[in-house]
Image (cartoon, rainbow, N blue to C red; front, side, top):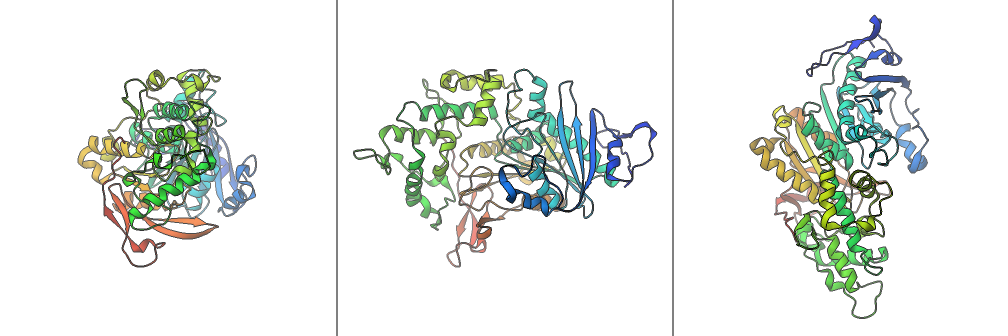
Length: 515
């Protein structure tokens, strides 16, 4: 394929180096001259031949199956250096045939630190030219942060922007035309990158999918540690994981029927006012009751974090009824690892800082201040993104034990209030009943995210109802409609309760005010 070097609307000129003749193969992408970036390798990959570096990884041989089904593609690897200390790795995958004319950048969660091959494979299999980044460091850790402020900036937002700019340049060169539309799709930390892109770089993407966005990151991390210390305030206050199933069953017995169907899923957990004191032991501690200390720990997990002296709310987000099987994420013996490594390296700049030293009265605010806005992503004015036609599709699982569901509800609400009328046609939030962090759990968690956002961007069809499925043992055993915030799926009264066609989205208040 030949190169055409186009001036983009951003005013960036892509110039062929050294007066070379136009390229004709995937390999010739290495000749592409990019500002502060290098195409370090470009190789064609035969259909089904890709094996991720390092082998199958955690998923074992089963994880390799998705790669065996991939079509032939051109794989370009880039190194980006927007600062003197930057070392951002990016992969761009380009379908050898059957390109759908669109670009999809993918974002990963945690601390990233590697190329998200599985996410790239999913995008490629759907016909997209796609790009993913390690966000500028190697390894899912934050130990680099104290001594490398520029790498922290890369991780916070710059790597995704540079990936978008340079990824599009590679697409332009390989296909000799620009992508018709550009999208970003990410969850958790990738969800934070998603909304950050809309805030900081409104021209990078036409449509953005943001799942379980971990915005307000450092304040949330500090709150996670504070809650963990509350739950583990003594040697007997922690709730053993062996008790989670009985607590969960008690919650379902009390609240599952409120939505008209007993199916192990709470459609609107905000209507469940379960009192954990009802599970208090009548005498000796057993596996089917909670001690007085454990009752207080259950309340700590499911209530806003408050200042220990004044009672003022320090963080609104908390776990909701239905999440009990995953309480060990925040309430286990040790704090959530991702939260701990960021607080250690950003707030205290000490990789060995002991979380037992945490003082909620001072350290939540300190964590927020020391972030300097890098991971906060608290700009609610998405007007520039909306005004150029950008669409933001958000989603969040109600049983998320890691990034609390209120995080997305709060962000969505503040954007709508700030943007005014333009928000009506530009942003939507879907809550996923019974779904954990990004996916997993008893609720339907699989839906066509890219189909929903592309229909909205390209045809003006804002999603009013999205069909999701739940898969068990490799087969779909339930479908259910996902409804936009302010509506809840309700059974029509006839037909099978595992068929989405027998449910309607009806208006219902979702009240997440302080409990």
